[in-house]
Structure formats: structure tokens, C-alpha cells
Image (cartoon, rainbow, N blue to C red):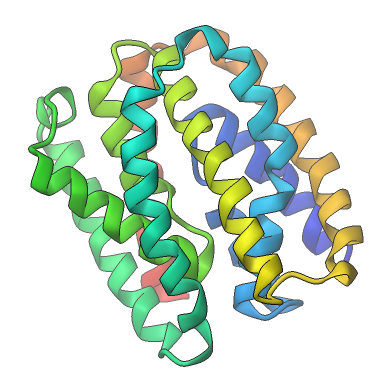
Length: 237
């Protein structure tokens, strides 16, 4: 059981450090084998807390709070509501919905070379926030669409990582508080969280060295590919 936490956390830290998101996707492949889905989502979020704080500190000079606060308020409002739905909704059907959405987005952005270079109209951006908050409350997975949103606003890798990791830091603090208050996360989860943090931090350190060889254009393609692979996972597993 311990290896089902440590090794996925190591890979999650590596993916998060390279793309800015995706840790929960990796963790939620494995955690439902040992924890209920809602509890696994809470553990996955907290496992990455140390890595997210490290990335926020590293890119602190490129943080623009104005572009983060309003999206987070919209996102968190929906996530607060959807946290309770894991007990009553057909989770399998929701996973299929998420998978189809992610695959379609990945195909679009990989096919259209200019798609990721323009800013989204507000209705589209708000849709990204609502959908991300909804699936974050259910599975702890709110990264792919928010990654696209912040990527469209960023002119460099550092600026993109500063925005999305600060967003995830707010998310970790708020959503974890809700999960603790509602009894989704309990004290018995702490040993698994601490073990996962060790693995995630190790993966983030490895990613930091690899990032020196990546620019924003290479990162964009990597992000789009990972979004597509994530969608395929939710469709077939």
C-alpha cells in the first residue's frame, strides 16, 4: 500500500513540475485502489502541497494576483458544491464526460497551431473555471482547463508556472479546509499524506533541473499531449 502512494507521488511531482498540473490525475490512477474516491482526491491534493509551495516560492517574482483571484473565486464556489456529489452521483459517467472533453481539447490544440496563442473570450474562460471547479470537487482534478486558461495569458514558462501554482496553492488551502470540515479527510490519512509528500518533493526537484532545457512552446505541446492522454485514461479505465 505504501508503494501505491510513494511512487505515484514521485511521478506526480515530476509531471507537476514540468507541466504545472497533472499531479492529481496521476495520483487518482492509484489512490482509489486503497481509498474512497472523495478521500483519495483529498489526499492527492495535500500530497502536492509542499511541491506547490516550493514552485510558488521559486516563481514568486512572476505572480500576477489580479489574474488569479477572480478565477479562483468562481472555481472554488463550484468545487465547494461538487465535493458533496461523490456520495450520490454516478462517478463512472462523470469520468467519461471528463475524458471526452479532455481528448477533444487536446486534438483541437495540437491541430491548430495558433489556438493556444490567443486569449479566450470571457464566456469560454468562465466555462473553464466552472468545469474545473466541478471536477476538482469530485476527483481533485481541476488542472487541465485552468492550465489552458493561464497558458493563454502567459508570455513565458516562468509566468505560466507562477500563475497556475499560485492558483493551486489557494485551491489546496480552501478545498482541503472544506474536506476536513465535512469529514472527507480524517486524521488516519496523515501518514499516507506525509509519505506522498516525500515522493512528490523528490519528483519536483528532478523536474526543476529538466525545466532549464524547456521553453514555453515546447511546454505547450507537452501540456496538450498530457491533457489528451489524461482524457484517454478516463475514457478507457
